[in-house]
Image (cartoon, rainbow, N blue to C red; front, side, top):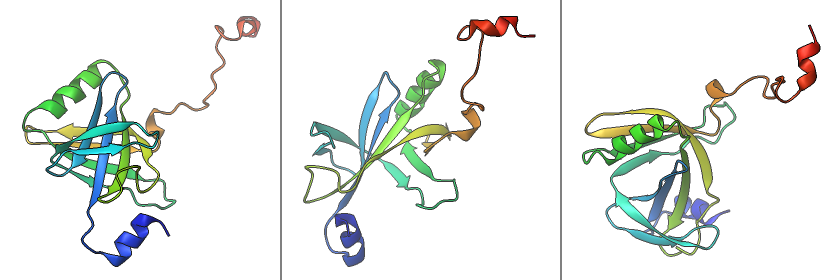
Length: 160
């Protein structure tokens, strides 16, 4: 039984911090759900400060039905989220979201293994941005994955 399993079962006064890391290859944001900043160690031992941000995170169900999507609702009153999303879309960059969970008394490492998801889509209004992230974006996945092109296989030019 993990620390989080014990905490969920027993309850108690200990606080669970849900943190998100947004990365699109150019910008990197560290956010924590709540009102206070959080300084914690990542899984590689580096220390990061997570900025307090009004958000809600609905973690994906752990099942085998193939729809394990992370739903994130972020405050967009300042326009920071929508501006970043527009830049990411204009630059044709893929966004990654890493979710980490910490307990109040142990900030030396995440309480469970962090997982990284790909941003699949979302929408925003002047008040709120909703982002959907998942393990794999099936709609943008080519099949077959390996494409045989004349650039990689010059002999294909002579097959007719």
